[in-house]
Length: 105
Image (cartoon, rainbow, N blue to C red):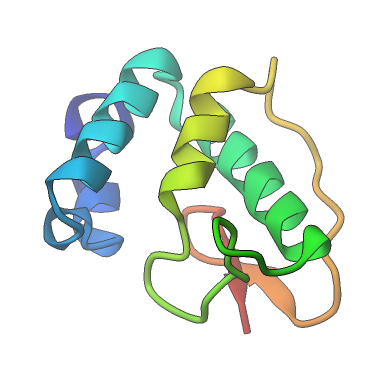
């Protein structure tokens, strides 16, 4: 994943500490969507949808953490990558971090 999205991103989100299954899904998503900006847009769209639909057993709200990306977001990115970077309207209480990923403030 560092090869496609950059070592600085890997270190910032502390992905090495998420466990093997998460890292396998992350690597698969990075191979599928190699452009970091497009990947971040797709992840943002997935997280927004997750926050709007509410919490279930398989879907959690966006956490206020360094890495708010869930495994389901990575699966969604692989299944439905955006065609290009899109403009995303943010709900109240959300913003973007230094890499453009959606965060809960």
